[in-house]
Length: 136
Length: 295
Ligand code: SF4
Ligand code: SF4
Ligand code: SF4
Ligand code: SF4
Image 1 (tube, rainbow over the protein chains, first blue to last red):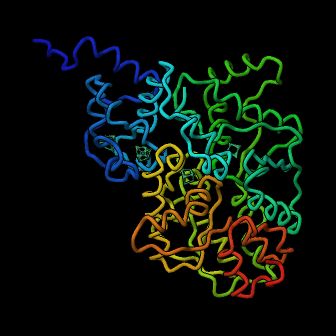
Image 2 (cartoon, chains in turn yellow, green; image 1 turned 60 degrees about the vertical axis):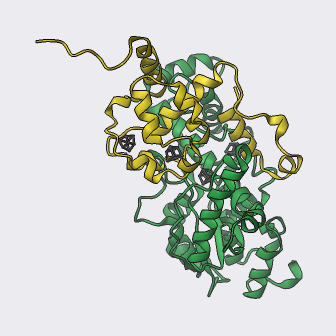
Image 3 (tube, each protein chain N blue to C red; image 1 turned 135 degrees about the horizontal axis):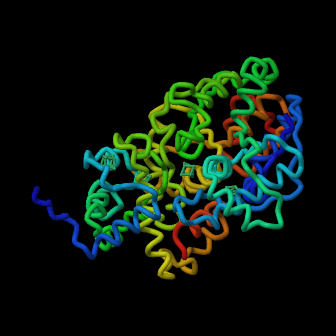
């Protein structure tokens, strides 16, 4: 039988495997139903939907997902995890994308730019979680 | 059961109004506990990356402290602490390889394999005290107060650590036991925007606006919360959120433990309503649940 060529560019295979390794999730299980985007509270802030984000990752295209800031805006609220009919832990997938950026020693926010009144007013938990999620 | 109490950093600083009434209420209800003599910040968010074990060290160390103090169960009040500790505990229990790596990394500490149970304060009230007994202990029932229960994310997701199934409605049971009326609140299990309020304030405010809008539509007199992050987004920042969005009106926010303290008739100073802003105190004075003199 003739072998079907993989639609994934060989150079991108490494990226596919990296996401799988960091997230423990197989993005190829996604059937592109869009449920995660429909329930996502942050989707309006993202450059494109979570469904599209997963679609790019299925082809190992990480750059567009980084540009769309999906990892940055995902609040890890886990609403989509409850709803995904394929059992994909979507925030783990986008956490992997976020980590790939952070691990190049890149911060996704500038702590020095947080306004002074926010610094004075916000609770410790807000800073701990912000810095845990968005600084390297 | 030997119960330990894990406070977490925010309850010892900005969120004294979450802690004080909670602990006084346990004393009042005759639930014995001991506050852990040593603990560290749990890290606030559970690490979602499979190779990132270093961020599991902080929560697991707290579980080791609890085991060392002979506690078989620890209770948290902050829902994010609950989520982080319970998920780390589950990881240690379920993943032998990671457990082994963690134990070897913390070589100077006793080995830990998930012996301690992590429970949230609301579960403790429901399962150890029970709504019936709580109702009997209420001397100052919150009659005529319609309360919107806000679970947010971390009490109910992911499922493996959820304190409640979809239909069980633990906060509604709690509100009813205090003599108040639970509102039908469509945003009860939605996200408040979390740390986005710091990282991306505009988007954070938009999210908070959706929750406050739903609270308005539920016609609740008050919104109750269990997490200092939620309180910041929905309480502290509420004035800004309402000002920036048409059609929203203000709704007083409380930690659920403050209403518990008031309903149990505890000294209202313990409830630290001064930290919630004037509207929260005024509502309780108006309803005659607390005396004006304490405002
Ligand atoms: S976990 Fe992230 S992607 Fe999923 S619904 Fe929440 S914010 Fe959206
Ligand atoms: S809900 Fe699940 S299957 Fe559907 S698009 Fe999202 S990740 Fe894919
Ligand atoms: S969840 Fe927050 S308050 Fe609780 S210990 Fe962690 S950082 Fe501190
Ligand atoms: S509602 Fe927001 S702050 Fe509260 S637990 Fe969920 S994400 Fe965190």
